[in-house]
Length: 400
Image (cartoon, rainbow, N blue to C red; front, side, top):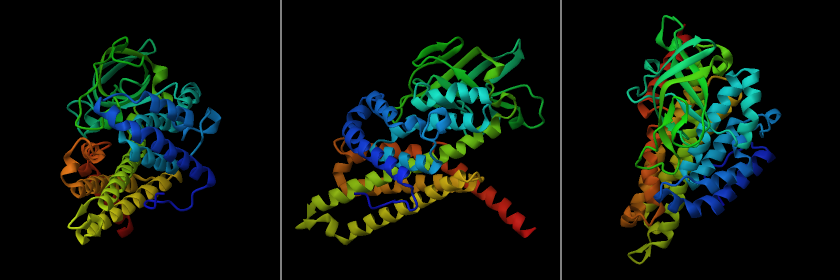
């Protein structure tokens, strides 16, 4: 029974969902993750199981065939999935960002067309903002959508770091359009691109070259996307009006940051579970190492960091659920949970000693996964910048 990172005030339905997901993780993910991760293999059976549980429709409203749950429920589910294998949570993260973008910013026709099939997992989403030379400077996007001419845009450019880039058949892509606005970010538009799952040319003028080889975060397909005069109807502009892409994407990123923070908590919980179990089994100087004060101090720090990170995740998710702006809270959650997640995993590896360096032990995989938590959905430094700027706005307003 899990005693860390519990959440007060959940409904009976929320608790039932979490119990089902936790059981699924224990039975289906933890026993298979090691082999799948070593082979960098897409977890098809696990994905099928998540579809059966309704995970792909978790936040999609009931009117579109989903469960209509909150961001808080989603974040807690992500914690559970990441406790099993962080890559699995990545498969649903970008899917949910795209579903969220459609729900919040799409036209009635776009929502009716995509959301029912996204709820079942028949349509799977990918989120495409970054580019090879872009980094965190989103307003400097160079992928260009010319037009519209005859009701179509022609998109040319290269995108980077698409999670689900191969398995998805719907991509929400940010490109530059010719709006003539004075500021660069006002000339960005979100397009909904349809393609076939797989690699190679998956639609005319749209190529997914292959999976990017990574240190960790394996199994999930992370790809590039190359566009060469790929034509898309003006009806596929998210919300039907060009030039709003930057604001739409930033809204989606807030959801993504809560997700990454929740992943960090889930990974940290698993690292703690492994550490405290190992510490009670491993004996030195005639007693379990858990009885040594130095190990107890380390476990105490790990548990405290998990509780603190979890509390920030819950706070950020609940604030977003009220409809309020939560960039400050999401940035804080993502920053602290990412940093603490890495620290907890490293502490667990230290407790494992030499065995923590062996691929036989699960902690080695967690150690390779955690660097992504410091980078994904905006680096730790970007989070500090967002937090600092927002604090200046809030306190400047108070001073006035």
